[in-house]
Structure formats: C-alpha cells, structure tokens
Image (cartoon, rainbow, N blue to C red; front, side, top):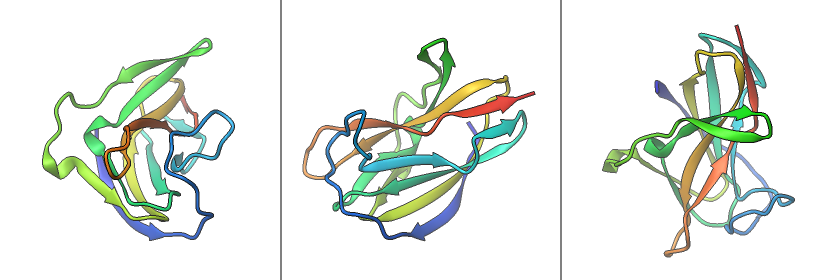
Length: 136
C-alpha cells in the first residue's frame, strides 16, 4: 500500500475516554477520509484523530482495507505481519495526523482499519474509517 504523510493538524474537541467505543458512542480515536467517493487511481487523505484525553499510539503498518460484501466487511489488505519501530505513530490528546493513501483498484465500498494502543497497558483495539466508494 502506498501512503505519504500529509502533516499534523491541531484540533479542539470534547474530552472523551480512551475506552473501546460501543456502536452508539463517538470513538476516542477516529479515522475519516476526505471524501466518500473516489475513482480508481485516486488518492484519499485519511485523517487519524485522537479525541481522547490521553496520548495514543497507532501502528501504520497495521493499516488495512476492507471491502463490503453484502452485510459483512472482508479484508482486502491486512497490513504487515511484523512492524518496525518507525511504523509506530504517537498522537497527543486532541491531535490529528493526515496520510495520503492510494484507493483500491477495483470498484466497491471500502473502509480503512488500524490498530490503536492506549496508554498504560490498556487493551489495544481496531478503529475503522467511514465507508467510501471507489468507482471505475
């Protein structure tokens, strides 16, 4: 997967806990694409936002892509099996970071996923982006 760092952005948001969100809660960590529709060959800007009151670490090498098949999401790209030290990214509380990513080369509905590690030994969790469509 091809990606490049766009740059950090500081934002102000409400303080939320850094627990794994339920379906109806606003997530403590958010992945959001810059658009909801792309054409094959486009790049997406993915914003990773830490809405929690604590710093978090996410591993860019765990970034994956899933494609919607009926009512389930199936992995298309799972990210790396092993990570190197340079793949970990720390986000301070209320901080955002943007990445430019190549969208999949087949039409369909997709989403990005990444593993997040909260501070002090709390359990890691996976965060999914908003769904987006790739058209031919």
